[in-house]
Picture 1 (cartoon, one colour):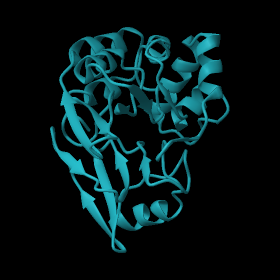
Picture 2 (cartoon, helix red, strand yellow; picture 1 turned 90 degrees about the vertical axis):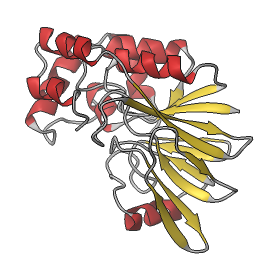
Picture 3 (cartoon, one colour; picture 1 turned 90 degrees about the horizontal axis):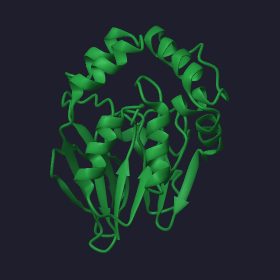
Length: 240
């Protein structure tokens, strides 16, 4: 099977469409949360994921949009964007987001937004944190997002190897346990503004990361048109 794994779309429909087009024919689409928040098209992004039959988990922004989490801990721009999101999303979008699980196991893989220890909140940003998450992983593979940065932590002989991929990088898993992050679709934060995703090939036991360009300027214009914070729009062009 070929499975497209995506995360942190953040209501950026243009980036999502570019990723789906680039991924082409796949057997499944897995999403790792933060479907909404920051961006200008939350309803359209949710509708598109439902159209392609994507399955996945709830992120912190999704929980906030569904009003099952408060937003007092958000920074100023994120809070303003979430207030706007809450005001405009359709009831069916809110219900769909609220119903997402925080952890989902599919075969040999477990999906979370943050980490296996803390599916909503924890950022996996180092090998020690990844090691703790791998210890809590009940399946062989874990897929997480939240950081918006493509990376993998591969466990072998008691050690954890850190893999920092580029566009087109292939990780040969060879039966090893790993925690893998596809990077962000709608708001990358690794200095590359192109939308990020990966493809898991379960037959070859490989993960391949990809980057794809999309019309950033049109998304920025849409964000400004609805009054979303200018800083959130500006950062799309630089990938930070």
